Length: 600
Image (cartoon, one colour):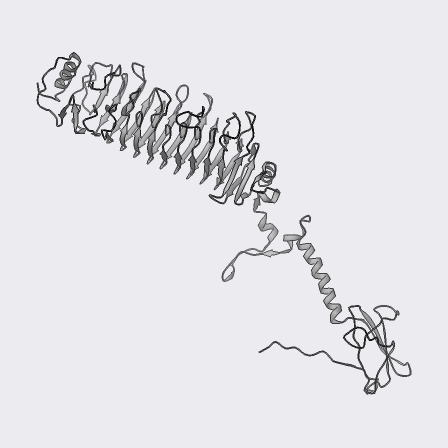
C-alpha cells in the first residue's frame, strides 16, 4: 500500500461575514509585514501574474500561486469593506527554501573544524550493542569520544613512504599525553628524534605500520626514531621500525632509546634493517618489558663484512646506576649482528620463551664493574650462534654470564653453538644450570669448547662459587671433531656441584668432564685431572674438601657412548687399558685408574 496524504486545496475560496461565498471580493497581497504590493501567480508556471487586488469569481474562488517569499493577505468585500488581514503567509516553496538554508547552515556547522563547540561536538554518542544502548551508559558527544585517541594524521602525517612526517608526528605525540596515539597503516618517514611523553599508549596496525629512517647522512646524535627520557607509563604496540640499513651514512646510534624511565613496554613490535642498536636501555630504567617482538637482520652482519656490529636489546649503565624489574619474553631474533640481549647492572630479570636463529650470542652480561642480580633464563630456543670471521676468544657463548648472582638457567634448548652453549664466568655466585638441552655446543676450538662451561678463563682466578650444574643433557652428534667436552670446568671454583647430567656423544668427540688450568692443545687429548686448586667442590656429591680428590665422578651422571682414545668406556668401571708409548696418554690412563673408571 502506497503512503498517502491529504491534498492541498486546488483553489482558494473566500467567504463574507455572512458565511456566503465572497462573490467579487478582493484579495490584496503584500510583502509580509509591509504595505508593499507583492506579486502572486495564476498557475504553477509562475508566468501568468494575478491582478493585485485579485478579484474573486462567482464562487468566491481564485487561483493563487505563491513563490518562496512571505506574504501578507488583506481580504475585502467588493465595496472594499475590510474582512480580515493575515500576515506571514508562506508557501511550500518558502518552507523548502527555508529548510535548504537551515540544512546548509547546519552542514556548515557540522563541517566546522575550527570551533570546538561545532563539528563533532554537535553529535551525540552513547555506548551500545546490537540490542541498543547499554544500561548505565552515559551520553557524550562524538567530540568527547574522539578525544580519547590522537592519530598522527590529525596533525598532517601522511604515511605515504615519501613525505617526511617527523614534525607532524612530534606534534601528535605532544597532543597525546595521557591518551592513545594511533599510527594508521602506512610507512612514516622519520628524519630526526621523536621524543615520547608520559602516560601514553602508542600503537599501529600490526604488520602494516612502519616508521622508517629517511635516507640521508646523519649526525652522530640524531639517528634514533623514538627516545624516551625521564618518563613513565608508556606502552608501544604493533609498530615496525625500519633502520634503512646502508642508506644513513656512518652514524649508528640506537633506533630507540629508553633512558631513566618507569613502566615502559614494547609489545608485538618489529625491528628490521637496523645498523645501530635496536633498543638501547640506559641508566635507571625500572619495570621495562619487551614482549612478542621480532628483530630481523639488525646490528650488522655476523661475519663483520659490513664493518660494524650492534646488539638488538642493549642495557647500558654507569657503575652506580641499576635498573630493575626487567622482562624479555616471547621475542624472535634472526641474523642478529651482535648479542641479541646484552645486560648491565640489572636486578630482577626474566628472559623467557624467546627464539634466536643464526645470530651472535643470545644473552650476555657485561662484566666488571657491572653485576646482574636475580636472573631467570628459561624456555628459550637458540640455534646456530656464531662469530663469523671474527676471532673473539670470549664470545659467542650462547648464554654468556659473567658476574651474575642468584641466577636460574633452566629449560633452555641450544643447538649448534661455536663456543659453549652456557657459560658461567668471572665472579658469578649462586647459579643453577638445570634441565637444559644442548646439542653440538662448543664445537669451535677457541676458548670455551665445553657444552657447559664454568670458569674465569684458563689459569685466571674466577671468584665463582655456589654453582649447580644438574640434570642437563649435552649431546654431540659427532659432526664437529673439535667438540671435546660436555662440561668444562675452570680452576679456582668453590662449592660447585655437577650432578645428574646426561652426556651423549659419538666417537669423533673426546667427551665428558674436564677440570683444567691450561686448555689441552691436541684434539685427541682428554683428561680428568685432580691437581687443580678446587675448594669444597663436588662433581657428584662425593668430595674430599681438603685434598680436592674427586672420587666416583661418574656415579650420578650418565655417559652414553663415551670414547677414550678409540676405546669405548661405559659403566662404572671398564676393563683395563694398557699403557702406550705416549707419556701424556699414560698419565691420563693413570688418572682414570685412580678414579675407578678402568680396571688396574
